[in-house]
Each structure stands twice: as C-alpha cells, then as structure tokens.
Image 1 (cartoon, rainbow, N blue to C red):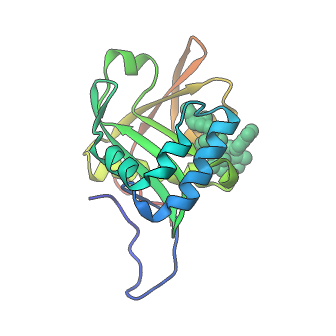
Image 2: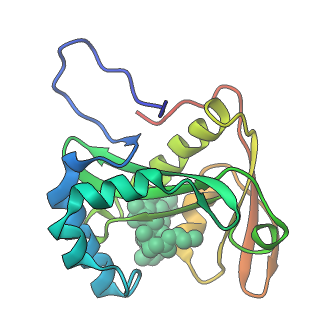
Length: 182
Ligand SMILES: CC(C)(COP(=O)(O)OP(=O)(O)OC[C@H]1O[C@@H](n2cnc3c(N)ncnc32)[C@H](O)[C@@H]1OP(=O)(O)O)[C@@H](O)C(=O)NCCC(=O)NCCS
C-alpha cells in the first residue's frame, strides 16, 4: 500500500523509504521523540508513556486516519531500523487548511538533519500522493522564517503563491514521472 523502494531479491542493503508506522524502529523513534521534545518541536509528546507501550502507540497511530477534519496518512521515513522522520499527508484541503497547514506536514529527527532526508522524504511523499491517493497537485505551507522547510519545499519544485500572516503558501504539481528518491 505504501510506496517502497524495490530492492534486489535477498539484498540486505537498506535505503531510506516511507513505511506505515512500525515497531521495528522503536529505539531510534524513542530517541528522536526525546530530541523533538527537548528542542521544543513536540513539547507535549509523552515519550515515557510511548516507550512503555510502543506497540500500543504504533497501533493507535495506524488507527488514526482522520485529523483536521480530513482523512490522513501518517508515514515514517526509515532506514533499516533507524527512524528518520514522519510525514503526515492530508488527503484533501479544507478552507482552513487552504489558508494555513496545507496537505503535507513533516519533521526529521534532530540527530539526522541536514543530510537531505527531508528533501528526499517529501519527494517520496509526493509519489505517494500521486500513486496512492491520485492527487497530482498539493498545497504546502510553512512559516516564512523556517528557512530549512522552505528549502525542502522549493527543492521539490514548489511555486510560491503568496505569504499570508507570515505563512508561505506553495503549490507543487506532481509530475507523472517523479520517482521516489533512491
Ligand atoms: C525542516 C526540517 C524537516 C528539515 O529537515 P532536514 O532533513 O534537515 O532537511 P534537508 O537536509 O533536506 O535540508 C534541506 C535544506 O535546508 C537546509 N537547512 C537544513 N537545516 C537548516 C537550518 N537549520 N538552517 C538553515 N538551513 C537549513 C539544508 O542545508 C538544505 O539546503 P540546500 O537544499 O540548499 O542544501 C527539519 O529541520 C525539522 O524537522 N524541523 C522541525 C519541524 C519542521 O519545521 N517541519 C516543517 C514544518 S513546515
């Protein structure tokens, strides 16, 4: 169901790819969650609770298919057993999301940043939008001050429509030939 990079049969080589949330990456996910909390990105994330029942947490994330009043897909970007980041895809826009929020949100684990993961993860998410959701044009928004996120969005071919209340609103037309970054 989730776009995955094809690997040669029997190959043990790994490369980052999107998957549905999985217990395989428990250790690195918990480490990343502590880092997210400590940097203030997810200050309320109940790391200890999640660590105590990670399988239950993963089940809840998998079951949670609706947020912001629209259907959503939550995917994790992983490399082997290493959690790298999360992307949340909102299947359609509402008037509120059209103004701020858009269709795709993401975060990369602090200890894995500045290695191109967010750029590649968004590229993979766009392939998922096109191939799984049959969506070919998406809106993304991010704070004007979020230089890293703006670079990620722009590197994926986005066109800036405008900036509303400090939030940049970008559109990406997903080409038919776009492949998940390998
Ligand atoms: C934004 C975020 C996802 C970027 O993740 P990342 O994996 O480091 O991004 P990449 O490595 O793909 O870098 C993309 C570009 O941003 C630049 N960049 C990364 N971090 C940066 C920073 N702190 N300051 C300035 N530029 C930065 C990179 O150099 C790269 O630039 P280039 O394309 O010119 O080489 C990550 O910083 C994050 O999770 N932040 C908190 C959550 C967040 O802001 N999410 C987006 C909400 S809209």
